[in-house]
Amino acid sequence: MNEPISQMMPKETMPERVSSLWTQRTLKFRIPCVGTGLHTGRRVNLTLLPAPADHGIVFRRTDLGRDIPASYNQVVDTKLCTVVGEGSARVSTIEHLMAALAGAGIDNVLIEVDGPEVPIMDGSAAPFSFLLECAGTTTLDTPRKTIEILRPVRVTDGHAFAELRPFDNTTSQAARPAVPTLELEVSIDFADAAIGRQSRSLRLTPENFRDAVAPARTFGLLRELDHLRALGLAKGGSLDNAIIVDGDKILNPGGLRMKDEFVAHKLLDAVGDLALAGAALHGRFIAHRPGHGLTNKLLRALFANQASWADITPEHLAAVAA
Ligand SMILES: [Zn+2]
Image (spheres, protein in one colour):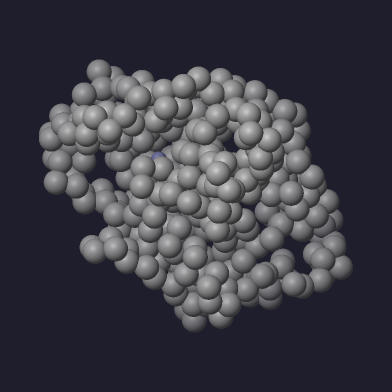
């Protein structure tokens, strides 16, 4: 690990906005909410609490007295959503809340939940982003762990793939941003005409996340929903918390929130699943038909090879920009 940032570049020499990208953040105040679990259909109480530097994002099952760090290596299931576990304690459907936290640049929060699921809310990250705005954020006087992607890492599953790539530092300077940056490009391809082929890119900033991605709802195919219900799952699922597609039709009376809401939601999921890296990422994420399992496999592949990433500090990127 490198020297503390305070010894390399005093904060007052950096513009405030740049400085905040390198510094850990938490919530100003605790904030509670209540919602329904998508799969159990049960009422869930969720409270977000401020946490000290280097605490990270941690889920606490208050009903079991167990803590589960929000880390890629705590992921125990990815079939329908992202599930983290510690022993027999689990918390599922963490990805939209994780995306809201990553979108807002929040590193340290204790998340108390009194059951096995994060509430689904409206199926997007917007209600969580709103909660975070209400709680407010505050900067902690400790550097944020930031890692740069140095070599491409790619994982596949049939026609689906997900990659992390370095910024191209052999061409123009603009290709490698001078501040920690995660760029994402996602494409999807569904036989159902209401979805079809869609692609979208995103440079992750709080504003881009809030405006372009956070409101995009999760979606499902009617035939799959019937199947899940037959298995006793998706009990809390309804047109209030998911877009339901049947061939060329969208069954929600209000239609879509944005014309490419499906791929926007895939970007949202990717932001949330990549947040399980436990560090800000400096690099590019490119994926076709990604899912929770593939993104988790990608993080495991990244961290399995020490040569594919490195911790960075402001000095590293300042040197590039000079
Ligand atoms: Zn999702």
